[in-house]
Image (cartoon, rainbow, N blue to C red):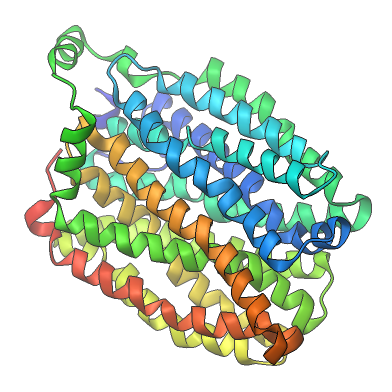
Length: 437
């Protein structure tokens, strides 16, 4: 029985009845993605000490957290995904190389002595991470039955909240004990060892095909970039999901950085206190939401495909007013408590959205489809979110003073209604557009 057939009888995370090769692949990819977000997001908890040490403005801080990483990540993502979609590409080696590059550059960030040096090091992190997720989604989709795809990709997506959680805890504690430079080197260097594990333990599914499957794949005419793009954007559901996911990322990355600064500036927490508090919100609540979103999508999507996106759509609508109240309250403990539910609901989109994307195109365009999603999420989300939040905070300081970040977050809470609308619109198209394979 192939990995895909085995998973059709089980679930999309490691479980009884799933082949050992697939279980190993899913777990290793999860760990890789944890390192991906750990290295990417640890800058959030270190933002204030970095700003103080290097004498940065909020705008420069937002530039380091956003565009410095996201522009190169987004621009390189599509050509790397085209390479991953080629039949002869070894996606395992690609992920291993990408991991080694971004881990080394994270450690280099800890050596930076000024804004320009840190800027180029963050660019290096973005260059490395561009090679990870499109290839990983393609690997998962080749190994998992369509009816379990949302759960499988949600399992991989647990790396987002888990990596963020670990980064907040390690970053806050190590910074208070040894400084932000040691924190960056501490989280970067272990990734070099993990890159070797990926290279020598994981297997490329393309090498495990039967002779007949391999011959059929080799005979398939690859799509040109233009053909892949036309197929992808011919799907109205894909366009709606792309808009929703991009706005979600814009708000998520912006809030991820500046909510921590909000707790430090407005509530007087230390980096350790802010890191541990936000670890509960961004980490544990994010894990719960990501997992629940994938499970509900597969369960209710089996009855009606439009329900794959029902929970993300309605969940984000509910999250907006609760999030606003969390930023409004003056008691930081109540604020943390109020942020738990919105964080969980806003995290539920990952598995359903990316699972749908993989089902809206043929296999030859899957990595490219994922890379376009990542292009939007990172260029618009990570590229503009932290940066524009910082620009707005600087602009509002003459009026709001120390509370300028809080004012920016007020608006961000209500903007969550935009992705809720577009996920709902996309759900109405899924029955007609989702493919069976």
